Length: 470
Image (cartoon, rainbow, N blue to C red):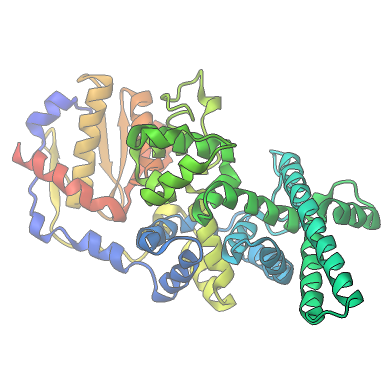
């Protein structure tokens, strides 16, 4: 390995590149997923996203499959799926009762249940739906606000039925049906009393540890979020994890840039937000595709839009908040798959992420030969382009004296990199990793092992061609 600065590298880097034949990495990506996997993902995405967003949403969910299907000591998606199937009837009954799409609930509850019904997270969330105590309270308040009107409607129908009967008027049969419907509605919203009874019967203080209560609280909370985001399941799914305030901050920031009049919505007056969502067809992908929103989602910026630093990092989202919607979508795909399909899909994602995501990759010509201080290094053109772009950005960030070393590692799309400006290199690689451009891990000697994500390889052919032109 030899160090070179960007200025020196500009004189000694030569790339022989043939763009017309550089398509095989893209071809690999387009054919890398088995048909049974793409079909079950299509079905899952169809239950959460609007038709116009489904093609890209499927690609994004597939790209995050490793997080969902890779088995660890504490996570096996098959266990999660087993819990959701065991409580499927309860989940779907709650969805019908509160008007929540079953795919949304089954996706969230499959990802959240952690293979058990009573697990508690480090954030003190618990149960199948990983509800916080505050979220349970919100669900109870919402249910209580709906309970009184439902009870009053029921009582009104009973009075009307009594009058019809006493006066021997027609329509008693129809009114009996109405009374039955109103009674069911009233009972549905009597959540607090019903859960109090179930807690006492089970002898537990925390209803989150009772699956039937936890499921109902979770589904009511989903109903709150659907109300907040104009019945768009994908935005509601994001808010289930991020919190409504954070998602509102994202939308405020976005609308201030693209639709200022509608950016003035509040938690209590959401009509301007509904107007903007409908008029501009805004959904979660709108935010995901916006560079500034994406930086806020993955923690590169705070929720106020400021660049994240050591001083303000606690004000930024974390815990993979940016990819939560894709994790839920992939988990719902696991729920929909047959046991045999699930086992085969899981089998693809064991080992390292780089190995799983390049399974079956067989590089073929053309190659880009990079000469560094006279030493030829051979890469696929896409990887050569990425390294050229990385060197350019490192120089811009750390100055022309930032030494840079590259050692090929892997089938033409991987390398170990190092620099005399490690903090700057780490910042760049971490941002590329968060934006899904690379797979990344730290190796001995302070080096970073970088593998190009085949999905985005085409973006770097341009950089390879520019460097070759020099």
